Length: 214
Ligand SMILES: Cc1cc2nc3c(=O)[nH]c(=O)nc-3n(C[C@H](O)[C@H](O)[C@H](O)COP(=O)(O)O)c2cc1C
Image (cartoon, rainbow, N blue to C red):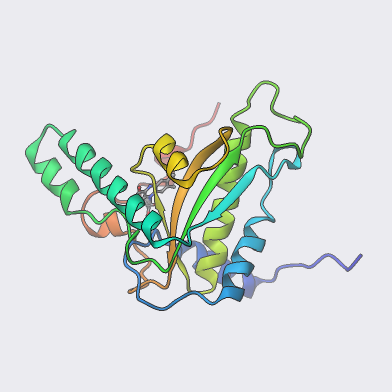
């Protein structure tokens, strides 16, 4: 066993910068992600915590142009429905002006599923809250997100979709639940401010409004 590392002040400053500059990215340049970087990202995601160490995440890497086109068309259709759901015309127009995915441009697409019957973990920790398996997948995605940003790679989470339709398109086992469709690639313009904040939709709010004591 190697000695446990300690993390010094310089690292903590850089880590804070990483958190502040992690972004949800929808605008990608055309550069491909090198294969070894993709492997490193997936290995990093696999270090995430999971209930009972179940590691229920299942990554599906998109390789087929026709599937990419079908996914993009599906999300565009769902997005149009979501826009129509805003009764107030001004809000509807503001929504329609947002770019909410980079499915056509991102060099890599990754669908993340939760195996609801993961053999690993032997059911530990999910007797009363089976949704912990899905939460575990989210920890893997966030780990991947930070590992990507640390390498200058952007990630965009796409959720305006019908999860069953995406599972059917990707032909995955019945007991896999879609957690996320992710776009990965180098961002056109790195920024420290969320895109939908810059576009006036929703800014970050103070921690004090979200912290409660009992
Ligand atoms: C669970 C989840 C689902 C999201 N779905 C979408 C989405 O469908 N489209 C999109 O453009 N951004 C999506 N986002 C990104 C958020 O809009 C983004 O995280 C938020 O605006 C804050 O910006 P930041 O991530 O750059 O800090 C999603 C984020 C999360 C965590």
